[in-house]
Length: 142
Length: 151
Image 1 (cartoon, helix red, strand yellow):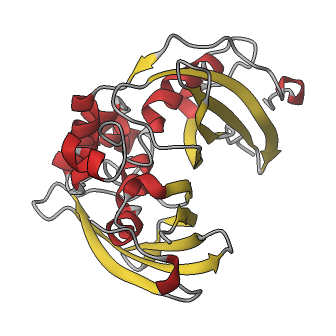
Image 2 (cartoon, rainbow over the protein chains, first blue to last red):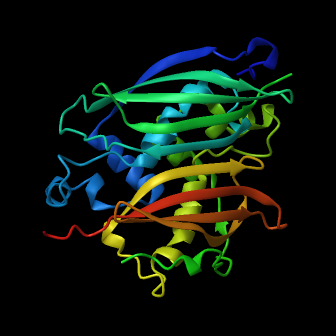
């Protein structure tokens, strides 16, 4: 992996988009890895009791996954200085092999003199955005 | 019931250190579907100039959410945990988290506001290394959904 050089980055640059799939198995795996065992992420009966259409993806699973659009491009995940997201819509995960898909695109919105760049991410599920104000600030290479 | 804004600035005692292990980093990275080698292979991380495996950018949530329970279950704030949802998350990293780090957290109440019958509380968690250097700051906006009153 090679860190992307600041010389090759300008405002408006679009990063390669990616499509991610989330299945029930992914939710269980993330629950175990993160320690977040909230029942709305694995128990359909209890999820429906609190008014959700189905079990929903962890917000932090969604955020952690969509950031890969930036880190896969950047070449060094250790150069993420800041990242933030607002969880606006839950992603229901059906009990199917395909699960739910999220289309993720990203665009450079700011390049600073010190080689830092701000990237804005858009995450779409079912034609609706599921995250808002999702930005990642990175340190680019020389 | 609105949370008393006087709790803004309330700071909790430092937590016991969280020891960041290589296998936890690998497990967490795999759960995010990551393939970058610096999460899995120590030599690959060292090639990038890091002392050990690098944790994914959102790994700090494991440490900060555990520490935030001091706020969530603070009897004086009286949050109804069953009505709390995660509204926003932000991380500011001074450096990446590495395997081998022992991270101590100091949690504080950063802001409190109410809107549309919901209470919104931002919990700030500072993660520091054994030497006391700031590694990451996590900001979690927790929304306590108001109880809808029947007309």
